[in-house]
Length: 496
Image 1 (cartoon, rainbow, N blue to C red):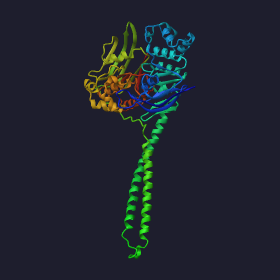
Image 2 (cartoon, rainbow, N blue to C red; image 1 turned 180 degrees about the vertical axis):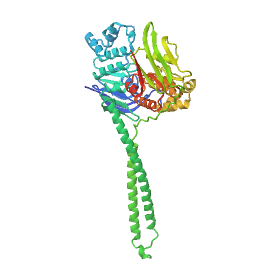
Image 3 (cartoon, rainbow, N blue to C red; image 1 turned 45 degrees about the vertical axis):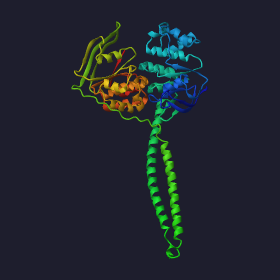
Image 4 (cartoon, rainbow, N blue to C red; image 1 turned 120 degrees about the vertical axis):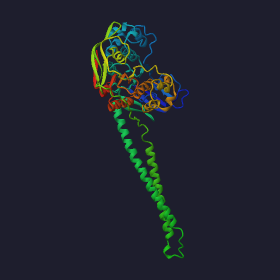
């Protein structure tokens, strides 16, 4: 066991007005399985790159381990997988490589195939195995679940649970629960570490947020009460002070000792006022220390259109062929109003091909695909990397209200400064939010989303779940987040 020490870390990108990190200090045990959480744009990937010494920073980072970053860059993917693994872990024995691959349910024959021919899931598993075989390495695993199917995510999560010594950035709740024992969270006001998995961290955070909200309300009432009491005591003090003046004890017998009495009464009232002021100041200080890490998750809205019939589309005996191979065979389903159909299956099983076919793309197929006349579809593609240019121009291009688009993005934790940037500078999660926000601006009969949650932070996922369960839009979606599918889907089809 050893420690990774972060002391007074301060970092800002060149030309940026705001620091990503300011005087951040904490410690990480190299035996931990550390889940790394935070909303998009908070600096998770930036922090990993700082550990890799890719940027200059102020403060200190000290560690006795070597940091290894995943996704690992493969210079020549045309090489056999065996050669790739040997270059990553030159000291690993063949039996060790085979043992790691077996844990990840990877067939040994991939070793003798060009790395480029492996599926996304196979590549992910092979590279993780190679990196864990390195000695004295601490892995920085950055969103490995993107584009992994549900079954592969379960395998990788189980594999990571058998390891120690890594930081894992992921927004998949079930995946995190299966493999981490600590959570590192970038909050609104600080960075904190807590023992446990994601669910325990989320539960504890909700309890703390609820407590702080209750305390804040109590302190607001207490401050208001003290303000009233202070005004009342101050009025009494002023009255007592005024009454001690104007009496001549040599002429008015009843005023004997009156001035001293009134002075003592005024002094006593002033002491009470100052005591109340002190209590009020303490209450204000306590109140100001609350709510700094409350994550605002404003409710989203969507405007689905009602179709003139209950059935919107149907598919009968659909078969899709790609390069002489049937990737989808004899699939049938119907989509009714307010149904939310989850299309499940492993990578390469044809999910995106079905999505594109339903959106009107020319996908060679056989079988019957019937889509309602004048059916309006709002489509979110899987890839968001193409986004670039000005956000206002993007809104105009898609004929959506730019004010509404920005309002939705603000609710998804976009800062206003992001609106001035070129979209090519957005993080992957921010780009995906732009696509989702644009879809939410569109009035449609059916919302067809292809892996909408890739790179999207957990809190935003929960906002989107709440939106869908509240407004019940008719949907077809592909998604590998098991919790999201369980919460949203009203029907599923699984491609083999």
